Amino acid sequence: MLLDMVFSLDSVITAVGMANHVAVMITAVVIAVGIMLFASGPISDFVNQHPTIRMLALAFLLLIGVTLVVESLHVEIPKGYIYFAMGFSVFVELLNLRASAGSKLKPVHLHQPVVASHPASQVGATSDVPPAASPTASPGG
View (cartoon, one colour):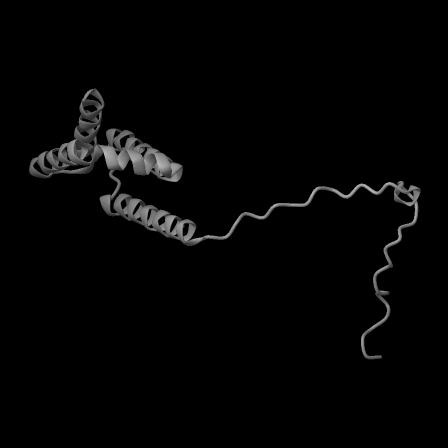
């Protein structure tokens, strides 16, 4: 419950920074608190399973924080830019999640280095492997 209150305060600060109308701010806070109360468990599980979502959320908080600081200096940033950046980031992350969930391929494992036991494997010694084709020879003539 304490965490819900902390994030509720964060929602209030975000709503104040991102909206110019009191009704929009109140609606945003009520929706955020409702989502946190009813969906905090499944959302927490999802975020714990996908660490990139956690990084995306932190990036959003950083973006909002920078926006609030810049606007406190009386520099107006059009909200469309902020919303587009966030929406595009979510879209790319959804593509990444879908690609990683659909991938049933096993990761590539490299073989261990081959250690030869005969003296020809020493540095500077010749190898039993035949040399590659001569670079001056061209195929077909």
